[in-house]
Image (cartoon, rainbow, N blue to C red; front, side, top):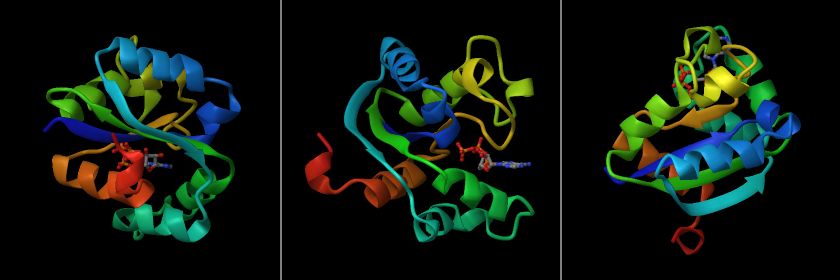
Length: 137
Ligand code: ATP
């Protein structure tokens, strides 16, 4: 798979870390093929995270993801999904490897700075959720 989808989450946007995170992504060999700042509605977040709707943290996750703008992007690289998940590190920053984006910028398991798709299929679904064909290059 050559593409993955990412969001820089509201915590990292609020903290002013968008530029540093995009810099780390591109210097790690990913090409940005789509990019924009938006704010998800409650309905957007509930749909995007529908797979988690039975989890105890679902309400908190939707609140968090809608509280301010996000930066979403589609990234291209050989082995994009797996390599990007390695670059961002574990969901919980306490478990994330040194130098990973979550180790550097995440605050907690919930407010963890970035999203990365977990499969080629989900990367395609998530990119199409956020971007029209005319917004992807
Ligand atoms: P993402 O899908 O955002 O890349 P992930 O695949 O590492 O993250 P998931 O287990 O799919 O993690 O959880 C999705 C998101 O839900 C996490 O990134 C985090 O923001 C939130 N989340 C996960 N576990 C918890 C938790 N225990 N408490 C609060 N929020 C959580």
